[in-house]
Image (cartoon, rainbow, N blue to C red; front, side, top):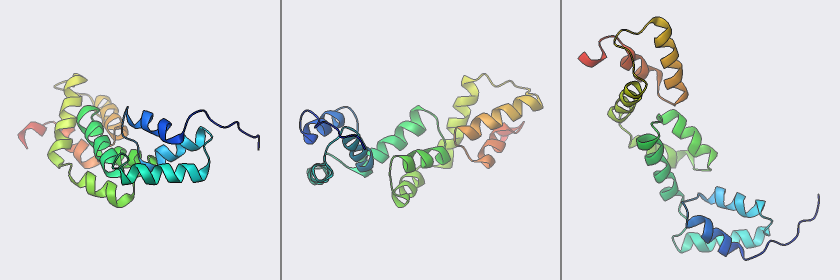
Length: 156
């Protein structure tokens, strides 16, 4: 393994600069510091210190991600759960935060997507299939998609 030169600046300074831009999870911040070449002991110390100071908080970072992904980006709970897992959020915390998303929130998000994509009043079977796949990729459950794409979905 090639030797790395010692990174400039302290790991705490680097971490504070990143945290000043957005919330990071413990794993994300640890990975960033490790990628910059800081020593394992220094990283652990900084992470412990930032957590104790309340500057590094997995719950806050995960809640912000759920809010942004669901309200702004229009993603469903399945995709958000995968994103949280990839950011190092525990399954229990992810489940707790995703439980706060209601079925009505998902239905409304699907409606916004259909409106933005100019969903036709009389879609063809090919249109329905294409939109179904699109909404699945965005992380919405199949039953919610099927309900929204039904011809008389507004009557429910």
